[in-house]
Length: 221
Figure (spheres, rainbow, N blue to C red):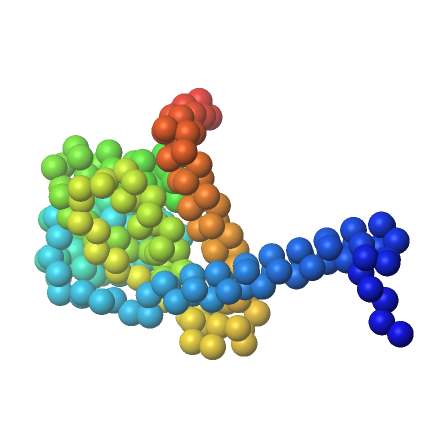
C-alpha cells in the first residue's frame, strides 16, 4: 500500500524533502557541468592572429613550449610568464626551453607574485598596461581557459584576448566521462568556475565592495 507523504511522520517527511533537494541539486550541477565542458575549447580557433603580447599561465612545460613557439614565429612582441615559482630562475627556464633558450633572455618577462588564477590576472594586467599592450594571446590548458579568460577580462576589460589552449597528453576531452582523471579534473575546475561566477554576481549586487575587500586581502597576504 502506498504511503501518502502527508501521512508520514514529520522526521520522515523532512528526510524525504532533503533527499529530493539533494537529488535536484545534483542533477542541476551535472547539467551545468556538461554545459561547462562544452565551453572548454577543443582546439586553437585563431592560430595565425598576431597580438601585442603573449601570456603563459604556468602549470606545465607544455604551456611554456607553446608560448615560445608562438614568440619564435613572430606572433607577438614579447611574452609574459605568470606565476613562476620564486625558486625557478631564468637558468631553469632556459633548460626547459631547449633550442629556444635565447628567447628567454631577449623577449620574455617573468612574474613571480601569482599563486593562483586570480593572481595571474592581476600581474598579467600590470604587465600589459606597463607595456601598453591592447591584445594578448593567452596560453594555458584547455580546461583552465574559461576561468582564465573571465579573470583576465575583469582586469583588462578593454583588451582583446585570444585563447590559445594546450592539451596535456593525460587530458582526454573527447569522451571525458569515460576517463576518471579527466572527469575529476573538469569537475574540480567547474566548481572553481562556478564559484567565480557567483562571486562576480555577489560583487555586482554589493556595488563592488566584495572585489575591493578581495583585493585588500590579496595585498595583505
